[in-house]
Structures are given as C-alpha cells and as structure tokens.
Image 1 (spheres, rainbow, N blue to C red):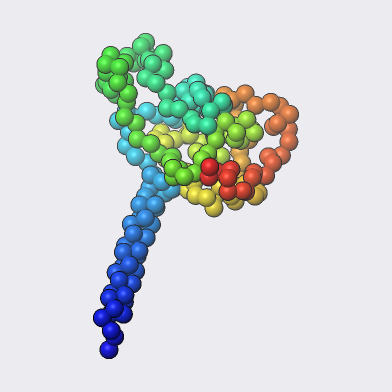
Image 2 (cartoon, rainbow, N blue to C red; image 1 turned 180 degrees about the horizontal axis):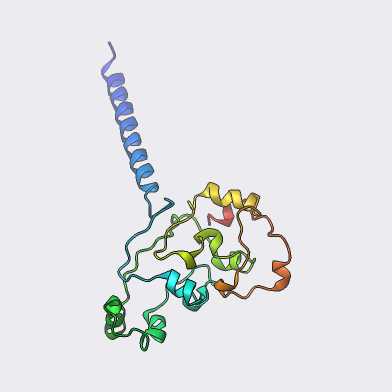
Length: 203
C-alpha cells in the first residue's frame, strides 16, 4: 500500500510517539512524587525530633535552629552542635539521642530526610519573604503544633502565583515563635503583591 520509504517514516513516527508518551509518563509520575509536591508527605526521620515539644512547649524560636533564614536564600538544617547546646545536659543519655551523640563524636552529619523540596529549575528566597513579614507558617504550617513535620502546602507554581497575585488570604504575618526581626513599619502595611515575571523564580 505504501512505498518502503513512507512505511519506514510511519514506523519512525509511531516509535517516536511511543517514546515521547513513555518519557512524559515517567516525568509526570516522578514530578508528582511526594517529596516534590504532595501535601501530607511525612517521612520517618533518623532521629525522632519533636517540634511540638521544642517549638511548642519549650517555645524555642525557629531561628535558634534555622539560623540563616533571615539573611540567606536557604533555610539551613541545624548542625548537631546546636542540639548539644541543650542535650549535653538535658536527657544526655536518652536512647533517642544516640545518633546525635555519635554525630558529634564522629563528626558526621545526621542523614535527615528532606521534606520541602522545589525542582532544581525553581528558585525560592527565604530571606526575601521573611524580611517582608511573611511568617514561616504561611508555607510550612504551624510547625510548633507538629510532632513530626509534614508538608502542608503543595509548593506548586500555581500555588505560589496565587499567593503573589492575592497574598492576603494566604499570608500569616510574622509571629513571636518564629523569632525573626522584622521592622514594625513593614508589619504595619498590607503584604504587597509578589512579582509574576518568570525570571523571578527561574534564573
């Protein structure tokens, strides 16, 4: 019915279509993996750190552990030495703290499982949001009430843009538990709309 060359082109087109469909399915599957965007993602951590005890009951401010959040694009995971500021005295022999003690003794990092993750092609600046008077809870939920931290928001581009376009329903203003230093005149004003141009988040 078709010539040999046309038959070959049809077969190539079908093969290309199948490969494209397979690649798209894989990208879609892994792109929706809980570690990227699923609300409710709650991995088991190597050490059972309880935010409800530390930030909730003991009122330890977020910035005591996450020290760089006011000045850096990234919010750091605290080094083990921060834990030992208290736990060299408090519950120092607790079995739950075995990995913490070993981390200090052997000078090795604890392999924490990352919960909140954006794709590599998206850039988020913590300090810019914090200094604008936007509280951690706006994106992470009230962590001081979470025994085990869980992803509370989808972290999708649509979710970010929705807040940039109309921040009032989404933004929680800076709270005392966060421990961040925001100028009073910033908090006195409504949260301004965020930029919507692509280059803000995609460098």
